[in-house]
Length: 76
Image (cartoon, rainbow, N blue to C red):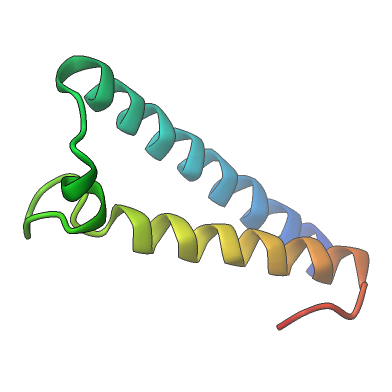
């Protein structure tokens, strides 16, 4: 597998995980609502505890991979 293929595979896996996280978020929101304070300052051990950090880290990695694949030079 080439480096580009490996990056594309990683990107695809991350996007799939992000979509799963979004679906779970929407399911929780529709079932019981999500208070903004729980989103921005969640209690330890809850679904939202690491949600924003994990989702943001994945989004940043997907962006970096996209730039690496395109060799745009905008990699941070």
